Image 1 (cartoon, rainbow, N blue to C red):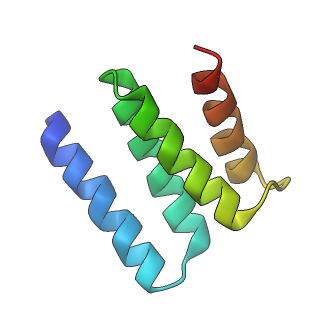
Image 2 (image 1 turned 90 degrees about the vertical axis):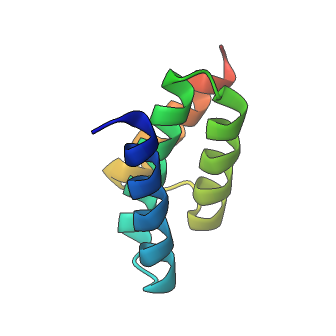
Length: 78
C-alpha cells in the first residue's frame, strides 16, 4: 500500500470509529496515522492529532493510550 492510500485508510478508519464511538479503534487509527505523518516529516500535524485524541480520552494506563502518549512525547522532544 502506498502512503496516500494508507493515509486515506487511516483517516477513514478514524472517522468510522468516531461515529461509532469506538474510542479504542479511533485511538489505534490515530496513533498509526500520526506515526505515518511523522515519518514523512509532518511532525506538527502528528502532534496535533495525538494531542487531540489523548486529550479527549485522557491520560490513562491502557497500553494503547500509553503508546499514543509516548509517541506524542517523543515527537515533542524532536
